[in-house]
Image 1 (cartoon, rainbow, N blue to C red):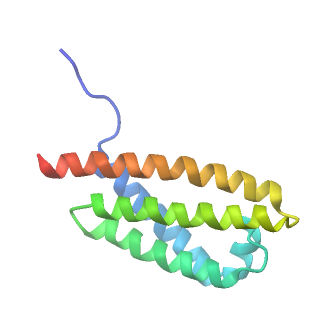
Image 2 (tube, rainbow, N blue to C red):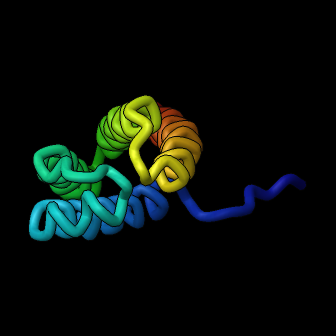
Length: 126
């Protein structure tokens, strides 16, 4: 008998939703500090835009029963974040180490979030 192990996809998506809301609030309410912490130098505008995206995605993950599309949006938002880290690396700023770590993290999270979106989509179809 085979038995699936692990956390159900819906529960994982809810966890991602709460994390997205927390990140979204931090980025929108304290954009200067958040941008500095993330290695984005003086890109407070970017922090606000990404924060707004996180607030929208997080809310969707928590309130919409069909979470697969919101997880896909989360994966695309991670691609945008990865691009911002790549830009910091290309600019050669003082925060290159932090940006390099951020780029790796966003790449991994993109794969994880996309995989979860596919898992949720399969669950929605059944």
